[in-house]
Image (cartoon, rainbow, N blue to C red; front, side, top):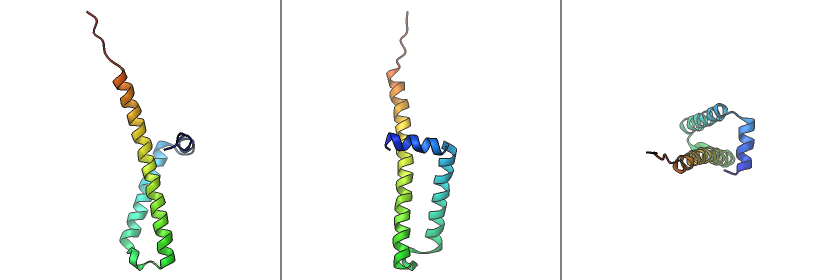
Length: 87
């Protein structure tokens, strides 16, 4: 995730709010998928639905990528710290 996008996201939504948004969006997609098979959507509605689903999945991917970056940074710091025993 671009650093500027991450900063904007963090300034708008708390981590808890972002987690809730992702969960809520996931539930909406799952509900739509189970209620109405894509084959039953009118063509225009299907195009919009697939575009929205794609954008939602890209948002989740961005959140996951940002969290993986945080973990990677923590692991890099931990690897750079070495305990030296003095005798």
